[in-house]
Image (cartoon, rainbow, N blue to C red; front, side):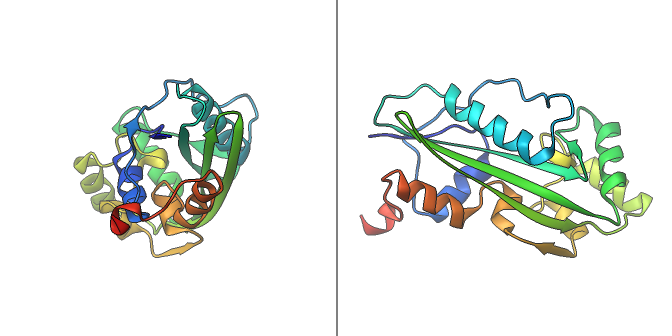
Length: 193
């Protein structure tokens, strides 16, 4: 039995390490992550995660873990910005308001699937032009849903959260541990070795 992480995210690798798990292989799936017309954020996040875990090649007894993190402002899905202008647009829309960060996790072994989605509430403070421009100059917004990562420089913009901090980062650890154990994975095996 091999454990395969279906994600190229270094943050997810770091979070799995907190559970004492190192993947035997990392195989990020290549799927179309375009939201469907009128698709709501939580349904979108769950669908994309299911498509990811189904797209990862694996043997019947391998355990595959995939996740997707979506930033939602009401019914609007804020994906990964294509450029600094779009990043600024996202950040200005989020500034001074609460929004949701949804992370869906799916674990597959053979034809069995375990899944969970976690919704956290996040408030971003109002941003001055100076703060916005300085943040954009860091390029930390690149490749990040909603144009920010709470564990990076934008963490200074987040005075309040309700929910799972690790879920906001990209992998809710309590729920992920439960799913992996249900699939037969041993946690903290490095510590016990």
